[in-house]
Image (cartoon, rainbow, N blue to C red):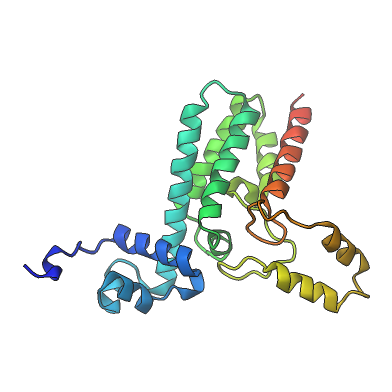
Amino acid sequence: MDEKTFREPLSRERVLAAAVALADAEGIKALTMRRLAADLGVEAMSLYYYLPGKEGLLDGLADTVVGELNTAVSRIETAGVGQDWRTRLRQRFLAAREVMLRHPWAPGLLGTRTTIPAGVYAHYDGIVATLISGGFSYRLAHRALHAFGSLALGFASEIFSPASAGGSMDVEVAEAEFAAMAEALPHLMAMAAAETHDVADPALGWCDSQVEFEFTLDLLLDGLERIRG
């Protein structure tokens, strides 16, 4: 039998797994239907049976990443039975961040989707459930969700980053832009000079390192603890 006889049949899951691998390796801008088909060894038109064009592919990628996030969080929840609400939420958010660090294009992608992946609702439902079990009212839980923002999904929204799919702001580009406007932006320049990221500190963008993420998360959790009384 020739090689084609043993080729794994196409499926939506296989196509999306290949798309994730390509985006991880080369960035989401490298992901096209034609390139994905080449990696899978098929004709581009055959992919449209599983995903209706580039937007369908991107929606599928978002679904896949959120599914991975929910799986990671589920493991944390199972291991954390009996822990207090603060510890459970902190571990949940950090588990989500590990997924984002594996797929650094994902935060930008999630921010561009017009349809919210169904798994996102399940994730936030779990967060609310944790808050309620910890003694919060639904009113406070609602306000907490607003305060958490994208931290719940494992990343911080960039203050200075352009809203483009998959792209986190390049540190050197940001610093160059600030330098060009140094006289007009003295305080931003001073802040940029003072805030030097450790090379060992994982980052998803210029304003989203692990240290900054955990600082913001702990600040919010401490505040919620005080409100809960």
